[in-house]
Image 1: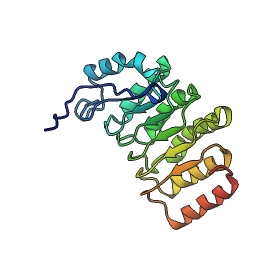
Image 2: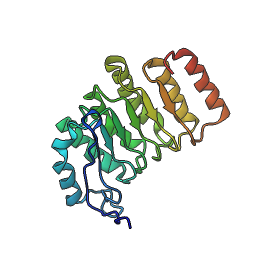
Image 3: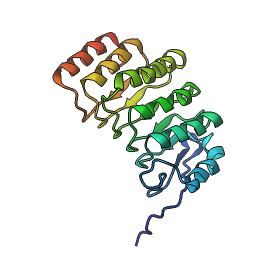
Image 4: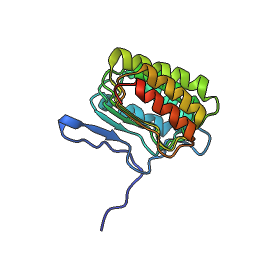
Length: 206
């Protein structure tokens, strides 16, 4: 009979060629709906800070920590340069909005190894997306031009419509390193996909 999954955190280590780290399923990183980290959650992140520096895969999917959680986590990661060695980062299914994406700016700038970034299942949407994603897009542009690292960006089920699509089109015209862009299950209309198709003609990587 399988053991029930607990609510404590754990570190999952794979062979040295592909180390991975994640909170175990059920770990709650938010206190109620107040969008504030519990002291215990902060302590858990700090406890694993040294370990995270060597992990190639960081999985924080499905924790529902929201924008405040991402800002806190990004500040911690950026300050300690914890994502310096990470090649895959999964922030999917965490209730992150377009506002929360601002938190990724500093973190991504310090990473020269990141190849896959998963932001799927977050309510990014189109509200204020142009101004917010322009900063995010600028961040991605800098990384792709200077470091040439991110090859796969996942934005599935992120409530992105035609306005968000236009920002993505602008990004694709400037960046030539991205090989895979996932936009499944969004609210982009036919005209939006037509614009994307045009951008793909200019982008020689995807």
